[in-house]
Amino acid sequence: MLTVACDTGPLHGPATGIARATAGLVDGLAEHDVAVIPYVVSYRAQLSAGTRRLALPASLALRAWGRFDRPRADRFVCGADLVHGTNYVVPPSSLPRVVSVYDCWALDHPDLVHSDVRLAMRVLRRSIATGAVVHTSSQATAERLRAHFPHADVEVIHLGSTPLAAPPAAPSRRLADLVGSRPFVLAMGTIEVRKNLPRFVRAFASANLPDTSLVIAGGDGNDRPALDAALAELAPDIRSRVVLTGRVDDGDASWLVHRARVLAYPSLDEGFGFPILEAFAAGVPVVASTEGSIPEVAGDGALLVDALDTDRLAAALTRAVVDDSERTRLVAAGRVRVGAFDWANTAERMVALYRRVVADSARS
Image 1: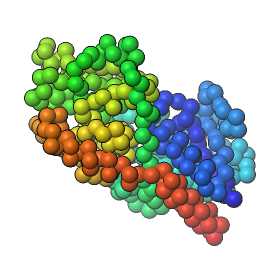
Image 2 (image 1 turned 90 degrees about the vertical axis):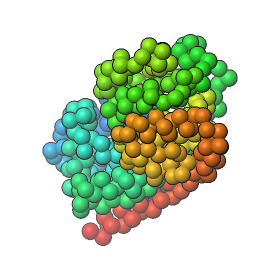
Image 3 (image 1 turned 45 degrees about the vertical axis):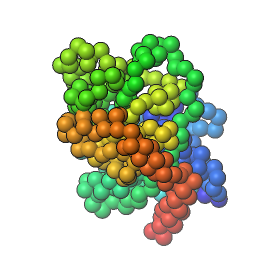
Image 4 (image 1 turned 120 degrees about the horizontal axis):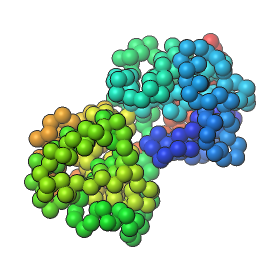
């Protein structure tokens, strides 16, 4: 049996895309002849039984691992054949290592990310330089990564799709009060530069959708000032139809996706795009950008537009909201597309990667 030490740290924080990726992978590995040793690099997380904690605070670990191959993780993951860092960081180890990279935004734009993320990128650089094999969730990310690291050993394995839980009959009272009764376009995600929300707000304002609201569901991030500035530019009647919900729980998120007229995903970069697949599964049309992995995941199931072209974003949005024949086509294509992303296939291919990495290490 193969034993893999797997970073389950993403499961102990907010329900991000990386948390979904980690959960889907760990659950999928349970169906194969693979034992998982879960570990975290955190002093704060409340751990489930059997999870091992590397005895170094995360901030200190990142600073150390970006410069040195110490402290190694070996004594905390004893019994493992391989270490898999699921969130851009894999600790130094004498064992073979795999590290998952979902997008290259922080490598391409270090000035636009938090200092902790820059530290993580320093660790990633050292990990690749010292032989870690990279798993990417899209071919687009693999190409960008190879531009940064021409000699890296990179393997593309798409993630799976997990449909949202059935929506509640009604949202929380707070969300119901915010959203009201109008049809709405939904944009989900943290308000950060990568999500391109200020430009999309301007596109919504110029679209011909007088009876439709725009709901932005996600916590504050580094682009909130720019979003506020874009909102301040809007005419009062349009501004009154833009709703910021803040972070929502799983029930409200499912309700929003299932009730949306359109899901908008106008990002400047994405490493995969779970919300696209969730919308497909829910029978909701999608308007998205042509950046990063989005075309690779969405295929013909979405209207894809240059992320920087406000006029084309507005036109695509209008078409997806009001053109019934186009909506029908998008829903049908999306339902077909979502079937291409299966966690069982992801796990099977990941196990093959693990075995290849372990065999290569044994020969070296």
